[in-house]
Length: 268
Ligand SMILES: NC(=O)c1ccc[n+]([C@@H]2O[C@H](COP(=O)([O-])OP(=O)(O)OC[C@H]3O[C@@H](n4cnc5c(N)ncnc54)[C@H](O)[C@@H]3O)[C@@H](O)[C@H]2O)c1
Image 1 (spheres, rainbow, N blue to C red):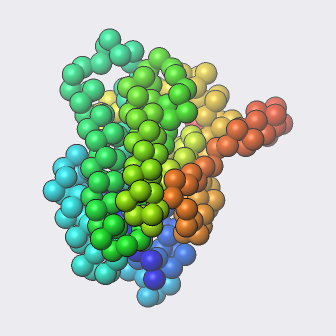
Image 2: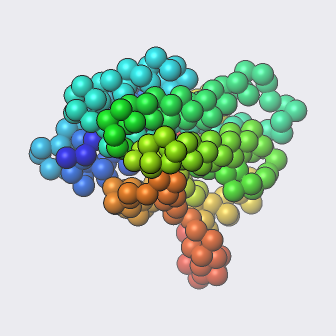
């Protein structure tokens, strides 16, 4: 039975991944900074999947290396191995141009979205190298493909760096483990989660402009749809430097072509 560890998995995409992995017969270790949501998520996950599968939950702030190490240790001692580790925790940036961002806002986002993925990858890589196998997934986002937009410069900078970091770590893994530790990217596209409505860890509300809502209605999906596609592919993957991608150019093109007669409204 496989064991999957996911950061930032008390809600949203992380929780949806945990549900799907458990449904497909994996043990899941969920973790987050939000204790209330984490408890609810763990209770729900208990009821999902084959009875032999287990869920373990723990508080873990991805800005804290020691907490991430404790997360690895918990998963390893409970289940004996970690097959998949997903650095999923992330926050949105306030919808402001860079010159209006405060030092605190900049540090907050980079610490979670970039340094959190680096710390998580470093710890999972060391453990997987030792056990001789495993997959690490880092979650890409706006900016990973060099897209640019006022208001998303900081977030895009972090995600572009996550992409570079992940690919370069995959190269390291090819040299250091012969690719036995697969370092991969998970590319969900646009997801309709609470993430798009808030920044600064929920403290700042984002009022999405109508233009943005229009794009989200065409290209966006609920995370439940994305995990149905992504999780079986993550479980089946054996390649280092793989990319599990939902919103491909072909899918986006199809969405724009059919937008006129397939009306979707996530904001009604
Ligand atoms: N929603 C989108 O449109 C979208 C698109 C592409 C990529 N992503 C990425 O997907 C991932 C998940 O996004 P989501 O939409 O589910 O967001 P979400 O806000 O619904 O969930 C994020 C979770 O991370 C947790 N978290 C925040 N700070 C943390 C920290 N320091 N340590 C541990 N956990 C922390 C939150 O408590 C929350 O439970 C993020 O990496 C995000 O950048 C989101």
